[in-house]
Image (cartoon, rainbow, N blue to C red; front, side):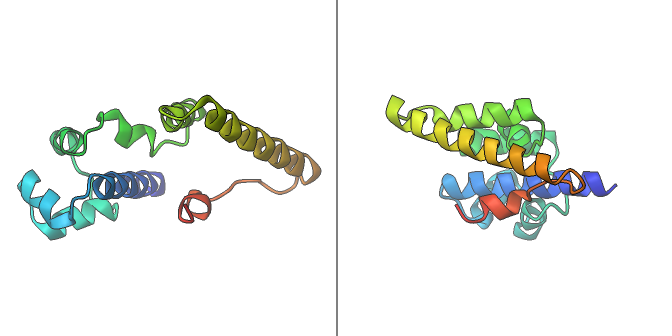
Length: 133
């Protein structure tokens, strides 16, 4: 049950991010989806799931694929790799190389930290990293 809540919350955050990137207000999206503004707010807060038809409508409205709502919310390494791939698209080779160097450096530091403190679970909160960017 808690896992379901966490998934809905992360999906809601992704929906809010996509909405802002598309330059829509909650009220505008709610109107286009045929629901109330409070209902849409509850979706973004992860209190309610949007349902498949609403996900399709939002994907069209925000100009993304429906999978974006799942991939960006996922903790699976393969989905996260797809997300990084999308971030790299459109960047120059120099910028891509820079980002990969940063990721490589951070990955090595975190692995080293985990190996020196095996008694502690090394898990970073998504909010710690994404809320600052």
